[in-house]
Each structure stands twice: as C-alpha cells, then as structure tokens.
Length: 244
Image 1: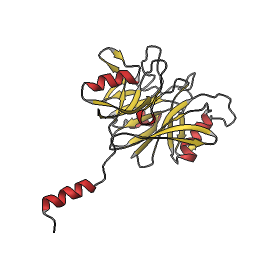
Image 2: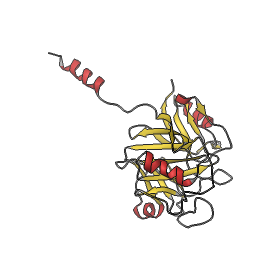
Image 3: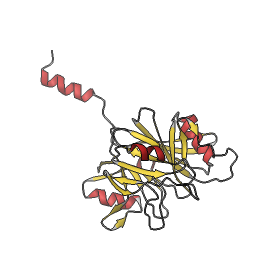
Image 4: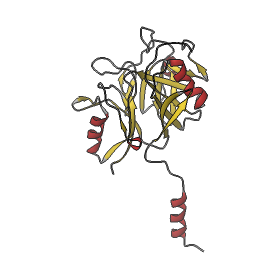
C-alpha cells in the first residue's frame, strides 16, 4: 500500500498538463500547403504590440522583451491589420486594457468586407462577429479585430468566391466549439479567401474562423525551424514559455 505522500506524487505525475508550447505541423489541403499551430486553453497565449520603445514590429523584439522575465515565444504570428505607423486597425485589447476601439463600419479593403470579427482570449477562446462583440462586451484579456470573418456559425463568408484569382499567402485563426482550442493557420502557397476559409471549416471542422492578413503573413515556429522575416508587423499573437 502506497504512503499518502507517495500516492499524491504519483497521481500528480500522471495527471494531464497543458503543454508548454503550441503544437505546429505541416499539412496539405486541396493541393495547397499549410502550417498549423494549435494552442490549448491552459497555455499562456498573449497578444503583443508595443514596448517602452514603441511597436515591437518583429518576433525578435518580442523575444528580447520577454528575456527580461526569463521567457520566450513558443510560437507566434501576425495577428491583424495595421496602419502605416503599425497601430492596430480596429479593436485591440492587451492585458485587459483597450488600446484601440472597435470599428463596425464597412469600407474599402479586406477589413471592411463585413462581417468582420474579433479574436478573444479570455476564459475561453472565441471568434466573435464585431457587432456581436460590441453588443455583448465580453471579458477578453486579449483581443484583436480583423476581417473578414472566414467562417461564421459554420457558414463561409458569402462574399468569398471559389474562383477568385486573388491569390496570396494568408493567415488566420479558428476556434473549437467548446472554446478550448485555437488553431492558427498560414498558407505556404498562395490561395484565395474561399480556399483558406474551407481549410478551417472542411478540414479542421471549426465553425468560426477569422482572417488576420495576407501577403505580409508570417510565422515563428522554432520546432519547425521557422522564423519568417519581412516588413514590420502590428499586432502579434503568440504563446509564452520559459526560456530554456
């Protein structure tokens, strides 16, 4: 018979725990290559934008800021559209503080292709249509607005055309119905909106997904030896893990 202390230690060692970093993998869907990074609710997922010297603009500068606390990024990607000065377009919430207000009007460009939406990190992961977010005002520790919505309640955005010749590398996020998983995707081939939306709905089985951006889309995934370079970014989403 085990002593109580030994039994407790054994039970704790066998208990499931959240992984320290997102799990990233490469897949092919409908003849196009994608990289996926899946994050569980128990992981430390955050949004990053600015430090004491202004907008981070890169994964490397986020890592420099995290080094001061003995931490580093486990995975990261750009997380929404931004202005020339790298300020977020639309809602941006960091550590529970709203840094930029929500925008609900239509307009030119992908962001104004309504409906657009908000990726919310709170007690669960959510992708929420922007008008619904404004009405509900959910408690999000972190939130970023972008658009268009790719999938909303299991339906593809009605303006995403199967035969569109607008082909770019694109990235976005979808969430599971129970809000315990967020799956981030970036296309490694140029694809149109319709193909990218179908990845989330038809391949990953997610009923809500949000577009982050295209052309400038980038991924940081050390486990895949990937650190994409390019122009400075605005909002960045990523997991935080202890620096080994």
